[in-house]
Image (cartoon, rainbow, N blue to C red; front, side, top):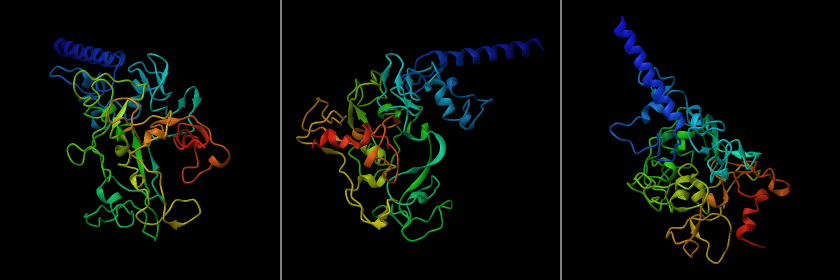
Length: 345
């Protein structure tokens, strides 16, 4: 009995210490529990329990609650407070904005993290799908890839009807976009994204997202120094976003669709992406493929106009209630003045 009690006490003590270390230590991307593991790593204990897990995948609790124990507004386990969009070490704004608040004001639009089914805006009427291939790739979705077979409709899809559009709804959480165990991508972004075209893919089917931070061309290696408050984008992030927002790569829609703006099923046109801005000047962030600062090869991409997590800007007048989002659409400036920042009229 004494041996059993001694074992129980020691086991509990070790688990408490491991969990305490995981909460107190400050973590960076691909540091702390996110990558660079060793044969004697203690990082597993920060998120997992082998025999007493409270959620699937042996997690202490469900995502996003688990992530927010370090990255939430009152957490101390990381210096990136994604709820409020604050880098707590300096009080500066996070590059991605904030899910709940940003710059001291409530967010007016944000990506979802709670696992609820939200629209992946790209075009047309929404429909539900599973994660399987046929959820997106079927004749009615409009996402049939060149040379690919016509996939069957997902069991959870709505009954087919003419012109139902191309949107899907997705149950996003933190791990939909981020790989908590680390990897080669900037900000531990998932690599297994699947856009129609990509500037960099390594291996094929994977998207490589790099930055001009110290070591940012391969953040999985020692020497990576993340900068959470200064834009240092290099290449690949615009392509990465289109893994979900497929049709945003198309300057002219491949087929007519309904954008829920009252115009029905018609051909649609989009602003070009991943293109150099030429003689235009802007204060908005750009991708810098050469890493040489402001130069002719800098190019516009999704994050030029939008925050990834959430924005606090307001919309009024003609900029308000613009279909299909009818909100601030993660934009960086109020009233769509991101346009004026480049196209000064």
